[in-house]
View 1 (cartoon, rainbow, N blue to C red):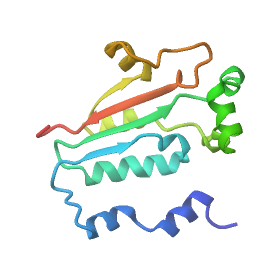
View 2: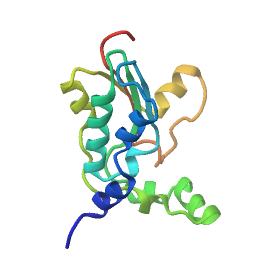
View 3: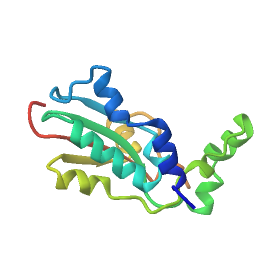
Length: 155
């Protein structure tokens, strides 16, 4: 029946890497990339394309930070106030927005390309700095991971 929805959307949006370069982005200079709260909602193929593009456009010394969610949420987590309040207060069902496909291992992909990586939970930073959030039972953030990747070089 033609293209997958994600492919159609990608075609409609054009080549964002080409647009960046056309607007003056310099792929020779080290770059800091942030994809916080994005990959959770992308189909697997789109995540792989994003990682490929960031790697291709990143000079030595570049950094990338992104957030991923491990697996599907349990029924108890799906019933957490984070999700129910969002539905009630602003009418957005965050759970329906999460892509249900198996996630690619973007950390392994970056490591295979020579990037160094570190993975942390949101709570690791809270504990380190003595601040919230701290995990609660059936916490919606428990399966989230923050990934920090560095391409060896000037950084």
